Image (cartoon, rainbow, N blue to C red; front, side, top):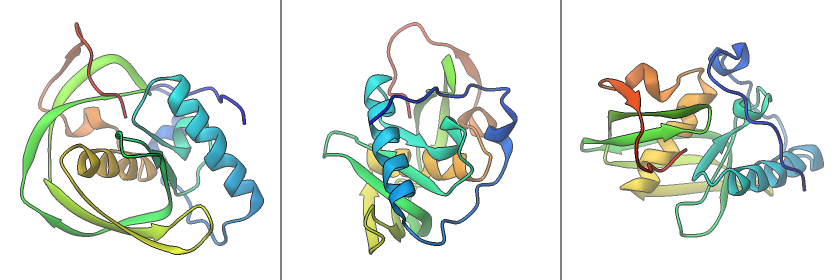
Length: 157
């Protein structure tokens, strides 16, 4: 496994739409492992492939329930509304309040290429949506109700 450089705001790749993964190959599995290692090293809770320069629809996350990877993730159901503080490894030092659905169901493929469905609420729902936004070239600062320099710690996805 390798720790990859995390691209920051201003990198053009972060504003582009990622391409669907046709097949989960060894290369994609290696990318997932490297992304998980990178996320842990940066002390984040989520990471999307564009953040490490890969325009592929791949996300990884760990909100304390164990690591998870999703390939071609898609929100298929959403309920409720919640506003909470977000940060991002690609927008270091800044946070903002973002309103998102409180509960989501996301379908995609797992790291073995098998169909997977994740139902999340709270932080899990927020991180899933944050990372899927990255796959569409959207940063949390695009959705935030104001952005400011952080003084304490905020979960960084």
